[in-house]
Image 1: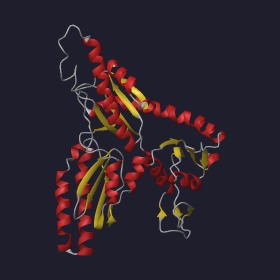
Image 2: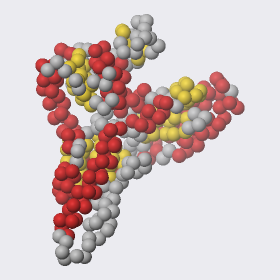
Image 3: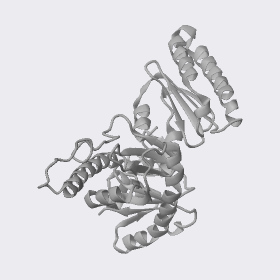
Image 4: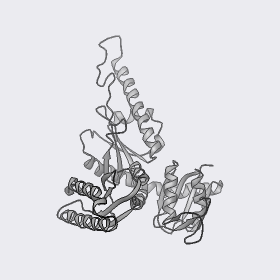
Length: 362
């Protein structure tokens, strides 16, 4: 599951939209309880739908729900499971973070828990460089999911020195020609990565042998996004094993980034390119001026929007049409959607900024 999946689910409407979430387990014997727990939640959902709408009206939805449940192989569970079923859609997602046990029937699917967890979980791209082929993974901690559809990845080197042989001409410097075609190939990889970064601007972990790493760093326009490198040939390394190797390096890099953010924030304050307090940060986020949002890990705050949608009022105060369960998380979502980055810091370290601050683009 990625951010686009969540946005697509959130945009789906029509009553009834059924959402079931539950915590699951990665290993046996704990995961033996997962199908039992899911069966109980499905029974609860069936009872609620039948009592409210009638057996005939919900028959198709319940049939889709049962068929979806039968597709789930619980030996492959992660930390959480979410099922989404409506008249037109039936989908489940395994996620690498714990979800609460819920059954929700509404006009729209319930995605708040997913948004919260994805916003606050360490996420990054892992780019495994190779000729045959280069792979791109979406990563949450040590859980890697390879992009295999809807993008150019995986990408194979089809040019000279790759799938096509080099010319058999003694007048041509074969080594120089091979290197140039490698640069062309990795320039294409970088362009494809750029499209993914535009949609989801996350840190990048590079994986590959020294030769490919050197070619890629020579041609990339996204060097500032690269946070760590795993050197070695991992063409045959599974996503599961690659995650175990890459995540410790990414975690160390993100810790260093958190330590450095305070110097960046102090410089922004001195240059009058910063904002503090939730209300001020909210306005700048919606104007697209947020380059970096810095927020304490445990900071949550409900609020109410005023009629303009740009100003926050205390929770419960009369205002516009929307009450926000967590205005902090809504701000995080807005900053990410507008191409900014978010850095979480320890609780108590942003007291001077009322627990949240923003480094502005201008």
